[in-house]
Length: 531
Image (cartoon, rainbow, N blue to C red; front, side, top):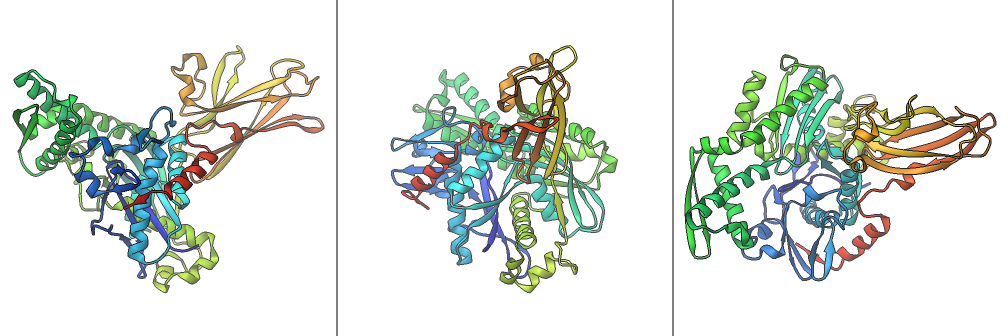
């Protein structure tokens, strides 16, 4: 195993980090000498430009630009794709282009080939979104050691210097497109997730969209036309909205000019009006804070430290809301909100490297070993994530109603393995349907669940031998790994042992690219020049 990097694959900006020879996590600047890379992709035939130059060209060639691909992760190529040069690109392939840029920049900065990485995801990402992220890494030529929760990475970046202090840490992570709230425990030698919740379609982009809609409405009132019908105007207004939002973090008034079809509207947006427009978004954040405290069986008095993560936490309204509901003095400089996740991912990558590969210690400096390895030869810190969603299956109750049985409850430390035994409901029953579900509650009735298929990871029919009496045991095992990828095995048992076995993992139907499609995408990306 060579050099390991940590990657924060963000909705609007991404970052990459490593552990330097002194054992300190360090952000790797990109080829443009910036510490953050816009997650924006521009297509020009076989040339793909990622980052600042692509973002700057969004006004000029909006039809060649892709942004916010992270919000589409986990969707099938049929549900979401972008077409360039007669080729359809899935969310994984678009994200892989961003990862390729980060990988190349890291290799140039470190002057070595990079193959191994830890990539972060929002804690509330579900199975398909996590698998899509891993696929993106594979397509970019990376061996993804772990898909790590973003709040866990941030807590690790903070907690490495706080071990032994015994703190309850509240991580408020509001990025460009996703939102997580997570409770972490930092103790003598462990950092553990206690509770988490989130909304992967809530982030700074939604604040931008409120400004865009407001300015467009002002334009339409003045001129009777909707400027958002034109893609070039939309891109221009989007950049102006971002600038106005950032300006309102420092000033009370921002001025926005919207030009379309030879007409112009000038809008003065006050901080007060901006807060009014986005009050509903802020309330969604506040509610999830309450939910996580409740799930963690805590109140604000139990919280020792609040970490603000993600660039959107720079908005004064966000910091004021957290200070008001927590009753605590918030230090916005406790960690760098833009960089903490990538730094934490780099730390976790090094911890994985030296704990799983004894030969790897020969390739790292004495300072790295001293910082991360204890006198007993074990890593100084153990990071424990929890399952961020319930995992279960559909069973029949005494009334023969289809209900949910939770096999792995939310917040079970991972990796984990859970087993349970069920019984057939009829004499001579010849098959059992195994339906694997995620994010549903114990004893929920299947018929009461709207859009049930959205929660189903897969199903199989376990064929049974003839002659089994009612109540014959069916043994089901759920294995959940560090990446929160599920493996399920079902067995029919009789007095003579197992009579039928089915590996449900093999038929879990994720909407993401399959192995063959990933391999083809790996080949296709070689035909592109990414810069």
